[in-house]
Structure formats: C-alpha cells, structure tokens
Length: 139
Length: 166
Image (cartoon, rainbow over all chains, first blue to last red; front, top):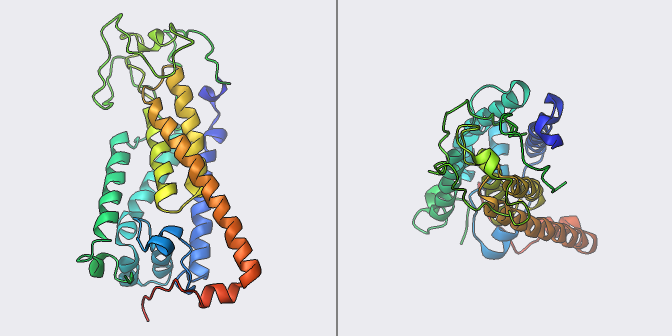
C-alpha cells in the first residue's frame, strides 16, 4: 500500500490543514462578532432551541480575542477549558507526523472527551443549569 | 485501491499508521479495548474478510507482530466521533468530510486486518455523508434566503433571536 510509507510532507498534510482551518476560523471570529447577527447560524439551535456541546464556541473565541474571559466562559465553558488541551493534542499530532516520535493520544482519551462533551451538552440544556452553563440561551 | 496486496510478510512490520501511530515494539501489548491477542491458530473473524480469509492470520499471529490487528482502531473511533460532531453540532462538512475520509481508511484497515472495528468506520462514514449532504443543502438554502430576503433583513429582523450581553 502506498500510504504505509508516506513521506513526512504527506503525513504532515492533515494536521497542517486542520491548523490552517483553525487559524482562519479564529481570525474570522476575531474580526467578525458572531454575536452581532440576530440569526442563529446553527440549525439545531434555530429549530430546536437546543445548545449542542459546541454551541457558543465562535462567540467564546471572539470573547477570548477581546480578552473577555468571563464572557467566553459564559458562552461555552467547556471549549474554553479544553482549548489548551486541544492545542497540546494538535502539537503532539504535528510532532508525530514529522519525527514519528513523541506521545500518542490514546484512543480512550477520544472516547472520554466525547463522553464529557455529551454530558456537558445534556447538562447545559437542563433548565436548572441553563443559567450557569448557557446563560445566553432563552427558552 | 481496496484490494489487499495478498498476505503480508510476517517478518516485516508493515502496519505503520499514516496518522502517526507507530507499531509497538516487539512483544509489547498496547492497551486496545481489552482485545487480547488470540491464541495461535484461533483467528477472530475480522470485518469485511469475505474475499480474503487467509490474509488476517499473518498480522494477527502472536510473536511476529504482537497485536491482534487493532493498531489502527483509532481511525474508526475518530471517524465516528467526527461524524457525530458534524451531525449534532451542525458542523456539517467541516468535520463530515474528515469523518468520510477516516471512515474509508478504517474500513480498509479492517479489511486488511489492521483494525477490528470497521463497524465504527462504517457508521462514521455514513453519518459523515449525511451531515455533509445536509450542510450543503443548508448552505444552498441559506444562499437562496440571502438572495431573496436580503442579508440585513435576514440577520437583524429574524424571529430567531437570542439575547446575550445586552
């Protein structure tokens, strides 16, 4: 199989694409205020009124870019808390792609992160917890 | 593309993951969902092995390579997680396309005995496709709305208002 022995440049492709998309998205979210529009760009939020685990992520990034940590936490606390871990995981990905050494993110971490996101998504939509986890959500 | 190139050389560690997993050192067992290597000669039926019954026995044989063909199981996990994220979080093609790519890789890895969770890859592949198609439809509808209703009207006089901050 040709993909078994990919050179470093080809192995570097996926993490570089993900990084470029992330940087571009951050740049757009910095310049454009995602909270400035009055229309939900998310079908789930617009149609069902439900905030998924990532909901408020763009607004949180925008708030972070303005240095407003409390606002960022209110928009999406989970994303703000896990952002450093995501950056670390991406760095490990790049290192593995270039040098084939360094730590590997175990598969159970992916499952655990997924479970945490699901629990967060459920909790933030429970009416008693909405004022803390999703204060911007109006029912 | 999807045809395995016959039985692999059991003496050559050939299962290098393009996503950065290195094959374990000789004799070391990676923790892989409690999948213990089968006893010699007892091969578990891998996914998608209909046409190539003899292929998985080589990479699965203990002592040669040291795993039971789970070293690329992360492909299926990532495919399913990204596919579900694409669907639930309205990320659409942003994570749907990676879910499709990883799902295809996962199914191929399962067919070649490098993974035993091809079902996860299939699920991620399907969900990724659905999310991608839905997001494309949504973008087209959004474009039609912008063209007919107008951007300002759509953005500032929508019934879907949520309030934050102010």
